[in-house]
Length: 277
View: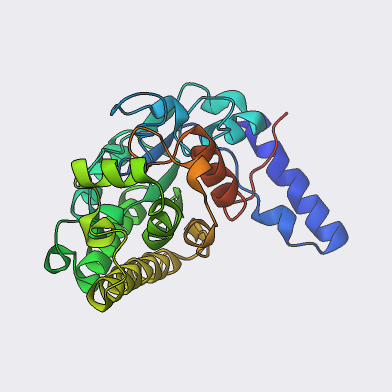
């Protein structure tokens, strides 16, 4: 314990000497981290044909190119080595988050990342999208369970990517349109991708608004936890990704470069970690 407490003592000394608050807010690197969410956090289609590729997950992956949260934590403190758990499951919605949280609790995770909600909006029809109040209730329940069961845990909540931008960058690509149609991918947004009819334009706007509402709800749930939780301030949603960031297996999920961008955008808005090197 003494070696791990030493940086906290140093931080306190720095604070008293300089009056800088940043030093005291730095957190010890957890010995266990867990990634929760859907196919994005599972690294789906990031390295092969319709398979999860957890090594390239923006959150818990160990691929050097992606430089995930896990590898960034590992660069600060090797005690987390090999304890990068990924409980994210492709196709998961907010309804599945609590079950993943319970697995993180059982594993005694000290740091948890969450990215969930794209599948709440990416359904066959608008009427099937998760209502915002239901999404918020599920987030509150999941985060409340983390707070109750793991009072020292640190939680990071990433915003859902802008699915309308996905349509914008891919609608002119015939191969992307083929994959979207054949796989019936995110039909609320990607159906009739070249249509400029008013009904389709308005549909896309409503789906995008629903994603924005989910992001606002998730950020509010996180804020209610106080200092134990951080959100990305909409960084992922706002990032201007291109076709270069998308898997060529489906033109929907992030490829390795896309996962790298997710890691960069999110980690920059997260916690300050103590450097034990």
